Image (cartoon, rainbow, N blue to C red):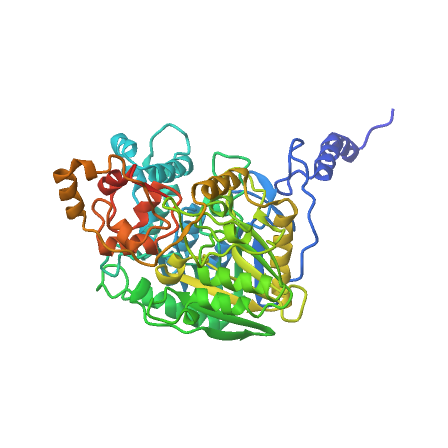
Amino acid sequence: MNRIPSWWRQLRRWLPWAALLLILVAAGYGVGPRPSPQEPELPTLAPLPQHPRIRVAFNQSRESTYRDPYRQIHRYGYNLEELIISQIRSARRSVDVAVQELNLPLIAQALAERRQAGIPVRVITENTYVRAWHRLTPAEVQALDERSRQKFEEYRRLVDVNRDGRFSPEEVASRDVYALLDRGQVPWLDDTADGSKGSGLMHHKFVVIDGQRVLTGSANFTLSDIHGDFDAPGSVGNANHLLLLDSPELARIYTEEFNLMWGDGPGGLPDSRFGVQKRKRPLQTVLIDDAVVEVHFSPASRSLPYEATSNGIIATTLAQAQKRVDLALFVFTDSGIANQLRQLHQERKVEIRGLFDPGFAFRDYSRTLEMWGLALPDENCRLDPARLPWQQPPQAIGIPNLAPGDKLHHKFAILDPGTPQATVITGSHNWSVSANHLNDENLLIIRNRQVVDHFVREFERLLAEARFGPSRRLREEVEEAARRCPNPLPLAPTSPTVEPELLEATSRSSPSLATPSPPRVNLNTATAAELEQLPGIGPDLAQRIIEARPFSSLEDLQRVKGIGPAKMEQLRGRVTW
């Protein structure tokens, strides 16, 4: 009888397990997250080559895919949060962050880790979004206006991990960004550090690493701007981008801007400078290898020539276009830029293509109306003479096809793509009067074909499924206005001021002169004098309302300093937008 060697018995015992292991490895198990059978692979485009010192990343790019770390959704795009975190963790000397809104806990954790490692970290944000939501009582939540309620719900969905309707200390400690920063002893302040209630919006979105690299673009550091709304699986985030620029000279310029806002830091003297409190800063130029980069900061005083402001610089840059201008904009309300584009199109035959966020594109204050060849008089049949409908409107002016709830949050323009003079205009700066004269913003103009090519690919992606021309509702409004106002009057720059007290006295003494239902005042088109006729609105507050335009809801008024819940209730039913 032959005896079976012991080594053979051992081998036979392990063979089935080895075979199973080979099957699992072949199937891809244990090598990182892979799509489930219900989650097919997403085909990607070959990545474009990046400039050696200027990297461009879009959160909806078809060049890459990633898994959303909060919702575990496999989706297209570059993970902008991962890019931010990787730069923070690479810091060896310093990290400075200036961002309008921050609610991503992984970024807060990375900042706290750097601070605990002994690296100086500083954070500046906008006061509107700093609130201890977890401490609100049910009655206080019920009393919130619509916009604040939305912010609370976003916070609840992110922080209330077990969905029991309450915020446990553990959930707050791990998911509330300001709790994370405070626990990590990260110093931070907002735009009330200058001793004010905040002037305009601290609208920056930039990070400076080690005085060497600048990370900036259109994206706030939030779920909705980077990954998508938490409880909406179809949402992939507002269309945004970030740039990483490796340049000590550019980093120095951004650090100077940061230091103006920081002053001597939290708890010190009110020597921070926000808004128009800052000194005039000229357009500055930096060479990054073969790329020419220009940078400018807002706001600009109204006493400065238009050409010296960010909007004026945008208009001047657009005037250099020879063949084509492509626009991807969240908000577009500035007259100077609109008139420059009209001149390019009508007089120099430069091709204009534009995509605009659908939440703003069809509003009566949006400059898309003139681009579509439309004129819309106000409720009093007055028309701004500077808003001239374009002759032979461009065909490719419209809105992108976005996931429900997502926005086109880009703020970029491409000039003459594919040519040696190819240029991109980008940054945090919306093309609005508020961005120009009220908000803290940064504007970048980059002249480099390799960098521009990335923006061209993003624009063409959005253009491919876009819808062009005005909506049916907007056309109906224009037709109705034409019937109502066959001969519209020019909108005067100013009108006589009528004291509210005089109107009230006249109504009491002469009831027949009183107007039972006064016409609503349009917040986006009214003159200062018209705004001052509203209850509780004086000259200073009227000017702040004008500077904060555009508005898309009554709740938007909460960003105007001096308007609280009580005053908003006074204005309810008295204003439109």
